[in-house]
Length: 347
Length: 245
Image (cartoon, rainbow over all chains, first blue to last red; front, side):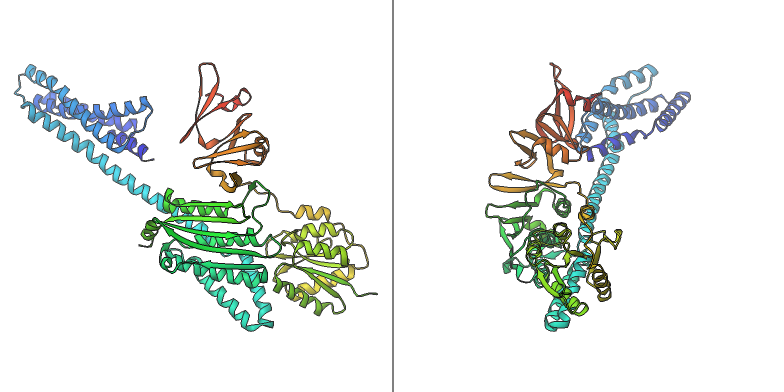
């Protein structure tokens, strides 16, 4: 992406369109004719010596890029551009001197002329290129950020499903009639869950401890709903509780374990949520001994794909996620985050 | 007339209790039995012969639709479904009755009234309706593949290419290679034909990873991949995909 920007920036040095290019040439020709008419030969020669190498440098670069089919890098382009401009000035030098001699005009000393030609090329070609590069980088950064936000938003919108709410409230209604204290307990879990799961918390980074707490409230709700069928254990080492991590990644995995592990399997299912830290990598594992994926080789769930996109947008290749079924019949979702990068996010 | 037998099947104990409570109020003379999953519902259906069954559609083991199909001509079925889960409303209520969770008492009363009125006549055949209620298959997004003894879940977006390997298929991503328990032919039939192209009896490639196709001196066509060192052959039969290259 950046490389295309570079070629475009060089093209812009000319004036982007054919029409603009022709107009520029016309202006140059007018200046040249004017100088000739006024008899300012020295000025014209100096002008030529300065402008021609730069233009030739741009043209040869673009041509080379097109012919070889390779894209230009920013640094490479800058170095090549300046080198070609310098070499161009060197080549133009004899022509400049002989032309001036023919017109019987006193020439500038070689060094002065070279420095002048090179300096102008550097300023005229280098500065816009540098500016364009800064702008392209800023744009790229902004693109990445908005991609991260979009992914984040998608992940959050998927969170509180109406039918989760309806079913939970239906349970609460029954408990309110028969076991009011448990109804209150359930409502408290629901409030705590909604408090963290609703999208107004979008911009905040979270901590591992907080995410475990949220997962705890969700699992407590589910354990009331499913009764004996659902057993769970959450284990977040206290040393890791303050480790920064993006919100709702863990929730996605826990919800997945309930939906695909507990719901389809008759009988008891155990969910284990653990976290560990080793060598700058935070590892979070959600394991369940539930239904698993069955015999189907292909599945259509998009929740995990969203999770991957979110990880990609936030960390690039530094984060990992795998879902696997072990020999023992346990389905494990394993999330690895760079611990240091997680801290960056919180800042 | 003997007391009617009602089977209530729902996997959430409190919701099951709530349904039973509502039925006891609305239909005091009925006998009620409960099941906590599809398999238990099926067993009770066979052994206890209920006249009416209130079946949650989403249940472990065997879902409510499947149970209803097996109950066939013996039992009148009322489906219980979570909000927005199945497009039951699209069907004629005369043929298929349902209540939506969380249950509203007056809706429940209506369902009970209707099913009581129908008890004398045999239940309608639901086979056809039930098959139409099944949600349409969505396009697959990931696949299950094994490496050694572990099953991995691979996002289809990560797949570079598939390669036929004896009875199974090898899937290649940037990060790993694994085996799938489907033949290349079966895979080709279930994947999006715009995203994956079969290019050879033994190879199917992710279209977005194709970098270029080049002819070797002997006339064979080879594909170069984007960001992957493999070179894959295109057999005569599939060369039309690359016409003009």
